[in-house]
Length: 196
Image 1 (cartoon, rainbow, N blue to C red):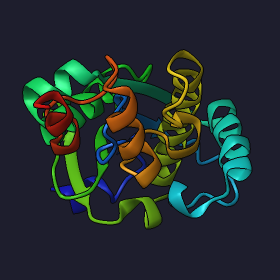
Image 2 (cartoon, one colour):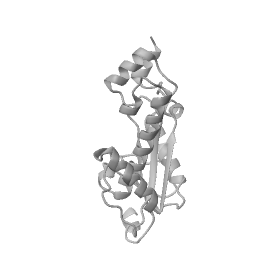
Image 3 (tube, helix red, strand yellow):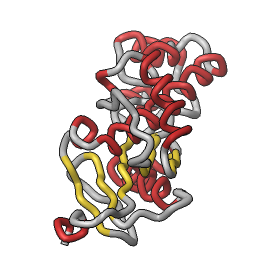
């Protein structure tokens, strides 16, 4: 069915999420439908780009894409559902929020959210499919920017630097300062601090 769909021009959304590994902050997903008439040079897996390049590409994607959307699942949802289900929920929200609904959604990874269109999960899709690359860039820039803001709200944790990931600095800050309301209480290093 997917192969038949790909035989004609159709609206294809790339979908990716960022933030499954961090101990703090939301998981953020983006969906992007690229415009074939407005190519964007240099789309790649967001993790392989410099911060400056990601930021520039993010602005270009928002300007040139036929449709784009950035959505999230909150810390409370991650703790309630688990990170996989919360990631799928954020992806579903991002596709549903697009101004044009796609006929096919290309999802990064090996799990698909529940959607009303055809879907294909692509492992390492962010380095294979330009629309998924674009989604990964939007999601990463949005989440990183939010964690920089959280650094001001919760000084001492180093959120601007590690973006909530479990670095040595972050784990030591949790031990010294305790946990904040943006920490994921279902994650082991945070749970350990809660049980002290």
